[in-house]
Length: 503
Image 1: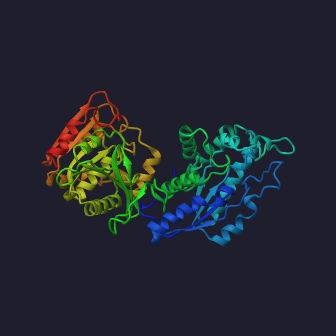
Image 2: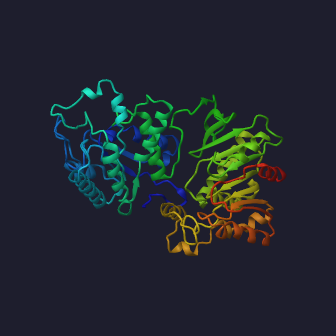
Image 3: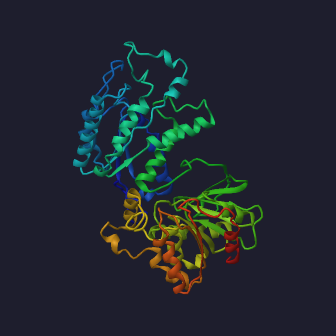
C-alpha cells in the first residue's frame, strides 16, 4: 500500500489538495474539519484544500431513469479542474452514485472501474499524487426511518436514489470498496472510509436503535468527522479523537500554558481525565483520587486503555497516567522528539515528577526504548510487554514472524528507509541500549513464549541477553504457552511493585 507519509512523521509543506467527488464531497464538512485542524494546530504547514465536489456526479457516466436530470460525469470537467487547480494531490471519492442504486451488475461495475481508472491516469498525468477514497456506506435502515420514505418510489417503479435497492451497501458498495482497495499498488494512497463509517453506524445504533445516518446516503456531521479523522490519519499521520475546535468534555476556563492548550476535563473509570494538545497532537492525563508524594506517573507509549490492569492499580496507589497520541510513527526519531516535548510540557503544566515509568506494549516498545536511549533523564523505569525491539522482525516480517506489509511501508517511510537499506539499519532499540544501561534504568520484561506476531527470540530474548552485558538490570516474566495477547498479568501487583520500587 502506498503512503504519503514523510520521514520522521513530518507534515508536507502546504500542498494544494484537490477533492473530486459527488454530493458528499460537495457538502464538504469533512474537508472543513481537516482544514480546521491545520488552521489551529499547524498553520505553517496548512494545505490549500480545493473542494470541487459536484452533487449527483459519477465517474461511470451512468444515470438511473428516475433521476430528475442525467447525472453529471467527472470526465466532462476533469481536465478543466486539473488545469485550474494545479494540484499537488488529487483525492477521488466516488462510487455512491455509480451503481445508480440498483443491484450489482457487471456492466455498471465495469463502468465504475473504467471511469475511476481514467481519472487516476489523468491525475497522474497532471503530475499529482493520487489518492482514492472508498465509497462511503449506504444505510438502508436510516432511509426506512425517514417519514414516508417508502412512499418515495420513482414514477417508473424502478430503483433510484429515492428508492434504492435495499442491499445496495452489502452487494454493490462493498464490492466497489474492495476493488478500490485493490488499487493500492497503483496510487499513492487508498483511504477506506467505508468500514470506519459502518462501524460507527453499528455502534450508534447499538446505543440508540432510532439512530439515523443522515438520510442513508449523505452522512451528517458525525459521519463527516469520521471521514475527516480517517483521512487525517491515513494521509498526514495525524490521529485525533476530538473534533477540531470542539470540546470533548467540560472546558477549563484557561489553558495550562503556552505548550499545553485546548484543555478539557471529563471522567475515565471514575478518575478525572484531562485532555489537551501539545504541539498539535492530543495528549491526556488521568489523575488519581489522592496523588502520592512527588506526583510520580505512568506514561503509556501506545495503546492507551488496553490491558490496563497495571495502569489502574497504580492509579489506585496515587500515580498519574499519561498518554500522547502519536501512533504509527514506530518510535522514529521524530516521534522521540515529540515525546520529549510532551514530557517536558506535562511536567511543567501539571507539576509531575521529571521522570516517568514508561510502559511499552507491543510496538510501544519501539517508542519506549528509543525514547529512554535519547532521554534517559526522563525515565525512572521501563515496563516492556511483548515489545517490538527490531523493526525488521515486526512489521518487517524478515524473521520468523509474518510481519505486516502496510505497517512495514509506513514504518519505512517514517524512518526514511527502503526495503534494501532496512537490512543494514542500526537504529533499532536493541542497537541503543548503552545509554539506558549507563543511566541505570531498570527494565521489567513480560512476554509470551508462543508469540508468533512479535517473536520473543527476535525481540525480548535479545534484550534479556544484551542488557545485563552492558551493566543493566532486566527482570523477565516469560508466560508459557501465551501468544502476543493477552498483555500484562491477571494480577498486576508484581508490575505495580516494580514501578514503585524504582520510582
